[in-house]
Length: 133
Length: 133
Image (cartoon, rainbow over all chains, first blue to last red; front, side, top):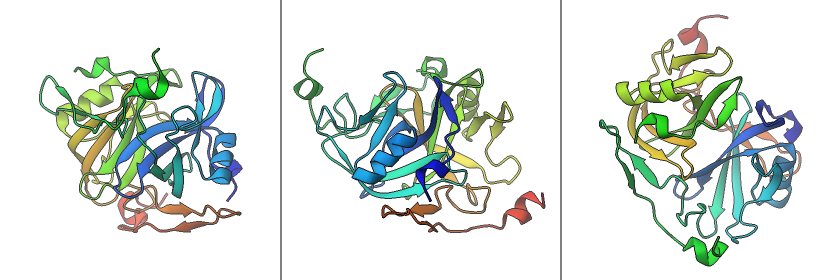
């Protein structure tokens, strides 16, 4: 199957996209979610490193290009309607710009009030990686 | 935190949405991805059963309403920018309308040609659940 056969049905700011869900291939932990256009899929498959489409900056980005926290592709799964790709990766460092291993570092209680607690592992200091803003 | 404080930034067909990633709470297997509007989040938290927003039918749906394959909410994680929710669930039957336990039942090879193979478990016969179309 060629990347062009995927279903880029998620149209955001004029770009046709699929959703990418990223999972740690060893532990199954879900790390992040991002969008990909066709070129991002092609670059990901060609290089073996995850590339995404930034809907705010309107450009392709290599995950880890500034932090060094690259995502090495181990395997790819496709969903039934071909509009979402599951990337199973080996994650360098941590995935979240806030310094956590996963972007899903907060638990939301199911009880009334829905208290939110940090439950994830902080693995780096953002200002050491990205500098002061 | 109230559902209204989430970042419904994914605007599709005039509706403001977050992305929901659904994971088997026991095995960590990723099962499906869907969108939720604020009402779908509220109904999910209130009932403990996953509800989504259908971008094609433009209505809320209770996952499993026709198949009986409900998703019982065990825990919820939020991502760093609050525009994606990870639902960790106990899945009745199978999640995919094609009869597989997960919608991500196909593996895409990383080799040239990107051969696609079915690797998921088929757990029910769609026509027995949904009838002939």
